[in-house]
Image: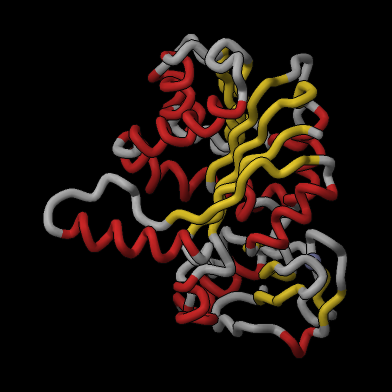
Length: 288
Ligand SMILES: [Zn+2]
């Protein structure tokens, strides 16, 4: 009975026809259904590799409404506490943005997928005029309770109307959750000031971990990871949307390791980042 219920609930998240050939949600390339990389027993959606844009994509994709429901449920349950322990991680990401913008810390910053608002509060304390967009109503509520002075809109970023433009846009662990990453980039580009900075972090489909684990890679989560990029694919997509790449690198650990493990994790991090094999891609780009 449980199996049946699970199958049904997953099937109902899917928006397309699972029996057809798959179509890449990023570049539109059509991949034969037979080329599916993974077969999930309890899901009608599969991952495919797109040679057109070097990404893994899930097909069929859930509808936007079903994705919203799922995000609301998942995020609030798991991420609120994690967020608070990531202060130095957020500090380092803001450092990256501020290194590019010489007039740093006085501009307007928008975070897409602002979660419980930790990065926004740090940005505000550094002098930024910071605001957020968050799909999950529960996360947006937490964020507003923590900092009523920071504007957080609960909405799907691509559907929002913006009256302002921004000097910096940050999207950490967001792109992989989107039904259409291209739409998000186009929208971000349209509300960035000339020379404004976009910072993206997303799982690295070219990582050593992915190469070793293949289709057992822990980022292949059909419920909420729809597009998984490698470095070339992501930088190409950014360029196609009129972004100029400033820097692109990979990271693995938190950077906050302590004790005896610290030396080993430093060594590992050095090796992985030298060959761009780390678990996450970080791409800093500028509105060209
Ligand atoms: Zn593609």
